[in-house]
Image 1 (cartoon, helix red, strand yellow):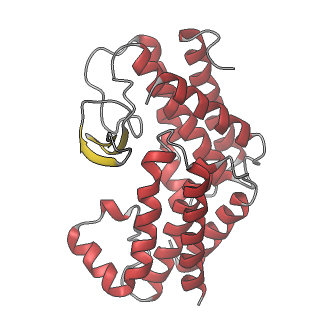
Image 2 (cartoon, one colour):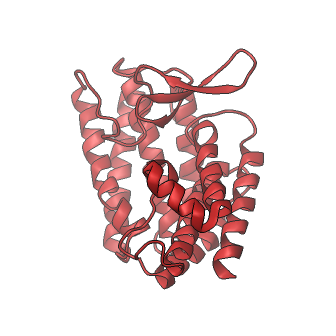
Amino acid sequence: MTPREHREKAEKIERSLGKCAPADYEMRIEAAMLAGTHWLNLVLHRMGVTLPQNDVLHTYMLTVNELRRYKVADEELVNALAEIEDIRPAFVRGPLPGGEEAADRAVRLLGLLRAKALA
Amino acid sequence: MNVASHLEKIGKLETLRTRLDPLEDFELWFWSAMNAGTHAVNAALHHAGVTRPDDVFPTQPGVYLIPQPDRSLKPGFHPLGDILHVGRPPVEGAIPEDVARMMKEMEIIEHHRDPCIRGERTPTREIADECDRALRSVLEILDRRLPGARR
């Protein structure tokens, strides 16, 4: 996807995120993951690190080599998305207490990804 | 995850979907449907005794976050509990016919995941309707297997 398309998708997902209540923490976390991935791809494309036909799906699916390369480009952004992804198992796929707080954290990390992508 | 927790997640996701527009909010609407359907398949697989209803949470096929006595979570290998998506990982063993039909319906939804959520395909009313029909079918089959379990 092109940077413009990533931005449009991320912004659309974030508008939908605004319709979620705190109790919808599963989808708030998922929205942060989905939109955050689009923001990271926008940044990597803009920097010329990846091509539009080579999008990151999840940081944990990257090869070690790719992960290291993308961290050279922007370690803070890669780490932000990885942290959102790591929140998912316990609260999206699991029923552990603290989901609303975990979602708040994911949305804050999404804000970091968005801010850097739009800088 | 245990069956009751899967059912509770389905209820939450279905409630949220009523507040989302199938086209205007397609991505989250779709993602909620996909998650609800996957919870339904997991609940049915547990109920059928094909997979384990353990309260461990998958991070990748075969690896789960496992609660420790001190309440921390530790990744570890674990027998098949919850699947992440239909087909990830494939489920070994005899799958009852009704659960197999649920999984077939989920493949209809999963088919649209990458093109519409991570790709350039524009979601259409037809795609949304197809996904909605598939999820309705998944939940109806679940309700026949677990009558009265979903509130």
